[in-house]
Image (cartoon, rainbow, N blue to C red; front, side, top):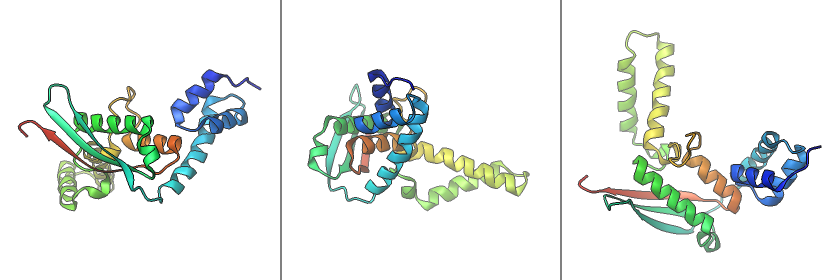
Length: 198
């Protein structure tokens, strides 16, 4: 059985956003195997996140961010369950990261459900026209793929996190990590992005 070290615990906490005791238990259960421990935590964390997602978020912050040079500004409202978490440094860091994301990636809506049906119909029409002459089954698959790409451009929660060098984590993933770490439901309610001259 591998010895669980402090660096292993730190690495897994950073990777999953889970609490100290949960990480230690998962590493013990996985006999020091970080990948296996990650899977164990994801299963536990996923259930926890699902339970938390139904709880009301009436506290939080309205965070402002002005990009260097004053050419882009962002206001974002991020909600949590208690004012205790709203004052937490991790929560404030999340607000800053989300604001930076909005400034850099210019999403137009928070989530998929917020995309106007007219915009989706237009995207489907364009994608279908580009696939003229291909078999209908292939067209359907390609159109759905193009819609996924469209969502990842316009929906904040679906965008790849700009601070993730590998581009694998989305804003939804970052949010889930914070929910797991802080133990409260967190939601991005709304935002507005100002660009000079736009």
